[in-house]
Image (cartoon, rainbow, N blue to C red; front, side, top):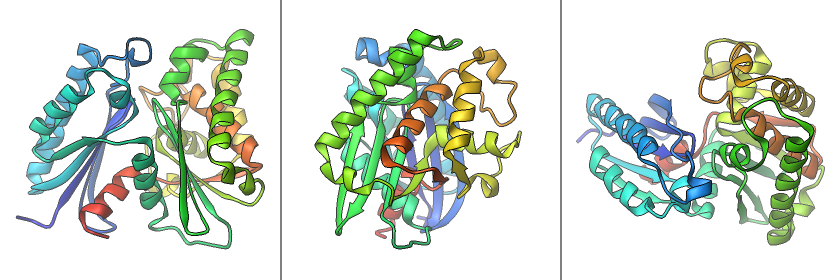
Length: 307
């Protein structure tokens, strides 16, 4: 057996792999847009075409794991699988394909892994760190206050908001209003469930994870090809968040794809993610966030190494 471990994340919009040989020592990262959550919000069922896309990607990832001699790992599934009636069937098949342990995470477990991954290489200061993980089906908030983890999982993923409120085309006034109402309602639930969030206003360091933030960072930098050194720990202003939200909202998905930095497969759902991001920043009273490419995968890998 080699020292390499694999962390796999079957998210609502993407399926991802990290192979590492030690804490912080990454061998490879892979990501595919699989849209596992397609139609789940309406049907509470993972549909065959989404399952096929994800199973095919997991088979590809198993081949990558074989190249690196991986025999130990953990596959996790999040919001889309939590919400689906056939989620257990999916996780059993996924476990069979990748040959490592697999399980469905609760929202709190997802937040804890994301927080661990995002803060592992972070230089801390006197401010509390709030990790914001905007996924396809849900958005997790996690912060440590007085030594205690406080977290909440909101039903505000970029795919869910797109399907339920915003739509995939040019955003009109009604869609804008529906989306703002949906986001505001979920934020109200989060702040009610975790009153400690209200104590963070204006004094918190916000760390943003996942595809919405990473794609925004690429567009903010104006880079066509992904460059981790540019995206990781890039400071993003709320002005940039709102600028790109409004620019993309006025375009069709095809037009959005022409923007430098746009990731194919995110062009229809990125505006929804930016609505969520802007609303969280407004609620917290912050004008900038730090983009982190270290996320739930890194947190899983740390747990596999016992770190």
